[in-house]
Amino acid sequence: MTDRQARGATVPGDRPRTRRRFRAGAWLDGMVVPTVAVLAFVVAYPTLRSIVLSGYNDQLLDPTHIRFIGAANYARLFRDSVFWTSVTNTLAFTAWSVGIGFLLGLALAVLTEHLPPSLRWVRGTLLTPWAIPVIVVAFLFRYMLDQQVGIITYLLVHLHAIATAVPWLASLQWAMPAVVLANVWSQTPFYLLMFVAALKSIPEEIRDAARIDGAGGWQEFWHITVPFLQNTMVVSSLIMVINNFNNFPLIWAMSGGGPVYATTTLVIYIFQLAFSQFDIGYAAAVGTIWLAVLLLLAIAYIRVLERRPLSAVEEP
Image (cartoon, rainbow, N blue to C red; front, side, top):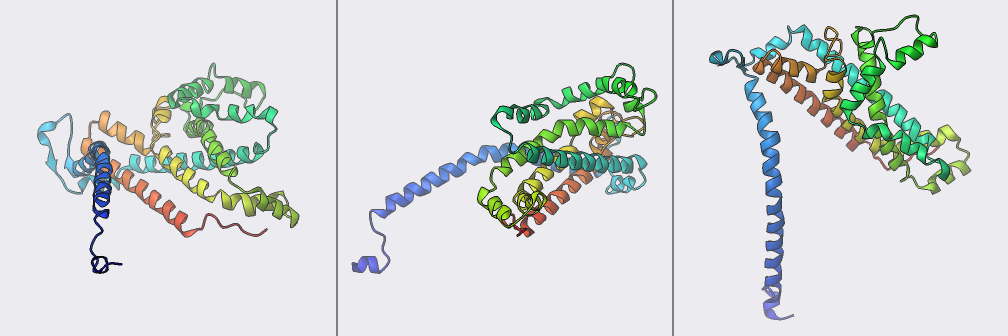
């Protein structure tokens, strides 16, 4: 080693290479700028603007009386019975849709995991509802549940499951279950697809070792399959919780939030406030609370994901 190199001097041949790396890195960083700018324009700005509007009395029908009222819109939430009804409906709609869809998707994935090649088309058929647009699903179930000509009502009456035709979407008791039914039918294939992909990652050596140790079907499922699917379970559930919190077209096309707010969720209520009652300030306040709830759910799921090791497999 020469004295120049010992004193930390740069080898002449290394300097151009470092500059080339710097220029390449700066060029790649610059490629991200347009994406960040678009996201800031279509996501960050509307969010911040909505939070600002939540502090104003902003009525579209009376634009001359826009004034700052501070937290008055948020205080109004505590006295708004429709808001609390929409919160309850949102939680019920999300919980039933995610819970039933999750269990059905997991069951179908496990049952179809070892299908023979001649029956692989069954899995493809089960995935079909996921490819149908939500608005089409809404109108499909709306006509199937029609009191007069709906096939579901026709079959239930002729099978003597019900005595008379039921106005499913016009009933305070049955409107929410009817909407959940359509939503579960549409979203279960998503869980099936996620779980089928995750099941492929389970090493057969672990399953063979469990069977040699005397593990039965339930023990193999609980101690091997479930731990390997933890990551998929958390991620897919989080995605569908957020999706169902934002599910507007299905509910609006099937019931319009009725009857008498029986299927009015937060997203439906915000739409009604903003575009039916033209109360922009109060709609922004409800939307801000809605955003805060979604952020809390996301943080909670991420914490659960971080605390539990996903690669751990319990011994049967």
